[in-house]
Length: 364
Ligand code: SF4
Image (cartoon, rainbow, N blue to C red; front, side, top):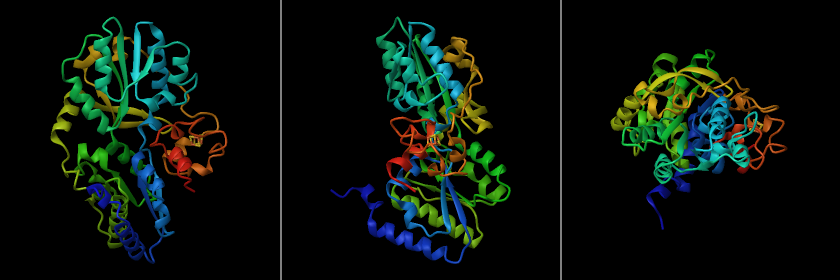
């Protein structure tokens, strides 16, 4: 049965958009477009969209996978929390379990006897806390504003006394700001902005890209025609020298975002400097719990310290891949010792990781 979503996969529409991109970019010099969303990379690789683009358009992946950018120090601290007391029950998302860090992943720690379980959402974690009143249930939550907003809304509700959270949430717009500041020579000409995250923030928060840095940008959804439409807009903006934030995902994103979600975020979190794995500390990119949530802040409740831990695993090129300096196939470990079954770096773990997407869909 033909669904509404199938409309955005329509081969004729996709072909038409690809032709328009070829047409508008004719005689233009190299155009580098970065996307910052793991789901975009997954869909671009899955539908082989790069193969529809002309050679002068280089579509690169940025730091858009939350599992990839979660600092190793926080995984090590989560391991400590799980091992600290037999009463502790650490819960997290499935992909987080397999993130490689020095000393072993959460999955390795579980095999040593710690009680670490997989949940699909914070609701599952709260349910576990109700079902285990004699345990301390600690939710290790990762993700961008898309995940942080529903987490914040639940933290404002009534929670069981044996529930706490160890959050690693990151904010995309200020991370992009840090990236473009480091790119004075315009290596990146345009940004394909993340549709999920923009549902929360809207497009207005990205206006610094055209206004301060002259970069073209478009918010895009996740179907093949959504992505090509965003790329077409970016190329047109560059050609016409009229950069803007073009909302190409109007069926989901309002330009000022979702006010309720923003309210929840502002009630619960404050922005702070935060570590991005392999990239370093970026100002105002971390969602830190406000002090009135100290009682459910696992870091404070159990006095956990995040030690300095090496973020880059031996031989792994994840930092260069997340910054778009290298493609996964340039990493000497890619598909040899590093595969989705045996990930050596975080970019090979999650469905949103660039290395994994390139491995699974045989992207060159
Ligand atoms: Fe890291 Fe593996 Fe990707 Fe190489 S292929 S950069 S080791 S995740």
